[in-house]
Amino acid sequence: MTESTERDRITLPAPTVWPMVVALGVTLGSAGLVTHVAVSLVGVVLALIGGVGWWRCVLPEQKVEYVQIVRAPSGPPPVLARTRGVERFSFGDDRHRLRLPVEVQPLSAGVRGGLVGGVAMALCAAVYGIVAQRSVCYPLNLLAAIAVPHLAEADVATLRAFDGLAFVVGIVAHVLTSMLVGALYAAILPLLPRRHLLWGGLLAPLLWTGFLWAIMGVVDPVLNARIAWTWFVASQIAFGLTAGYVVARATPVATAQTRPFVDRAGVDATGRGKP
Image (cartoon, rainbow, N blue to C red; front, side, top):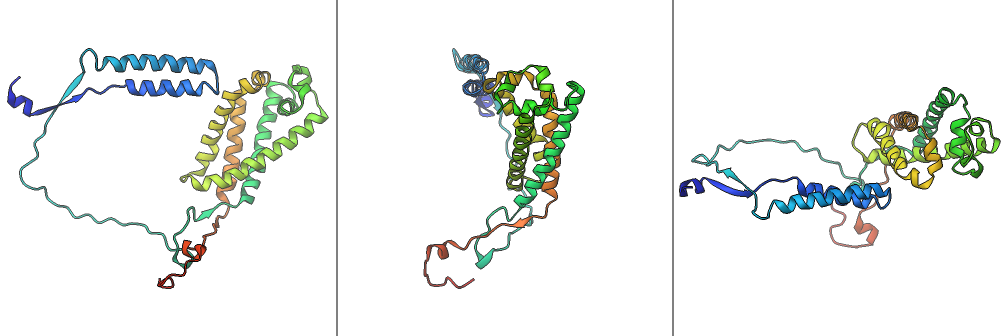
């Protein structure tokens, strides 16, 4: 290799995917501590494979790649003037800095959205009960089984039958949970980028379902074996779409903008009254 060739290129470490494999293995190994031992085993195997592959990138000889040097053209490049517009926020009260978000959805809209979403979710669950179990009481009894001990071990015939206690517990739990989740929608959706229906109608139900699927086998294996997850996802999406629509359509209200720090701190300084 000639000296001129050496000057025309530089030597860099060869790119490798093994560090990302190690990171994924460590992440799965940690996640398995709160989900399932199989997840930890997969993580440990990936971490070991990634570690060996990463080790072989430097031993017995480091793998490198050569990058050709592109010479810059002689003379300074032309300067192009660019103009860019910047959107600026107006000042709040007494010219203090605004706190974001400036507007939020009212919590009352979240409660209304939660109730409407709860109705949509209940209709979807009722359709599942009629189509799959030939009983509209089955999904309600399955929901109440979390709090009613004798339903947790009940057979299918018992879950299909009407139970007064399960009916009251299931309705109360469903209504309260729907209102709480709707209020969370109203509080969280304004903090996310636009397209609230996408966040609240699809992404949030899928994330929530995935979380429940991961922990249900540990928390309540009997209930986990009886849940039809396809219908569960459909009912969650029905809730998210309807609740997200109601919350997104509500008229936003302005957030309370606090006084400047110097006023709250009681500082009496020269020039405070000047804009």
